Image 1 (cartoon, rainbow, N blue to C red):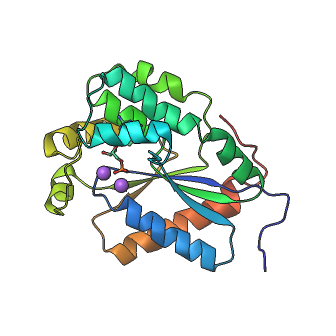
Image 2: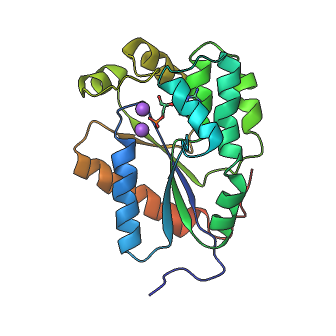
Length: 210
Ligand code: DGP
Ligand code: NA
Ligand code: NA
């Protein structure tokens, strides 16, 4: 049975955090749960490496190409822009989107390099505003201990410390912060709670905003 009325839109739910915080596996678990509950839901991630822009980003992250910090910032942003209309369509048709990284990653990672924060935010203006931002909180040291930083450009302790600082300055009271050092099951449970609460209360009747 479809629990949502046909007129209600889907919720835009964003997961953020440092590399190795567990975001990707948690978004998979959340997707599976909501899907099994009968919700119309999709799991998305940024960067979306499947597009032409996404392939440039992927090559940069793999250290196979070099780009000016501003140029790569704009490519990450363009990668979100190229998905904006599809995102809007999905949400309006009632599909909830769980999105692994969004504009906050854009601002946190680039400002961690020393780029001006207002400059970093500018190209994100006009993208759809999330109904919920969940931050999976882990210290850079603990994340590094998890082993499995890959070989990608940003997966280094000293840089992740700077990213953690940037996220801290971006966070506001609307973000839900979950301790990502809890067990996988406990993080999953807390994530479900905040997401279900959002789906029931926070976006009903609220138009999509930018
Ligand atoms: P992921 O596929 O989630 O592991 O992300 C790849 C890496 O790119 C990760 O270190 C986070 C970083 N990243 C994600 N989005 C952005 C962005 O918009 N701008 C910048 N500079 N980095 C980003
Ligand atoms: Na990564
Ligand atoms: Na990830």
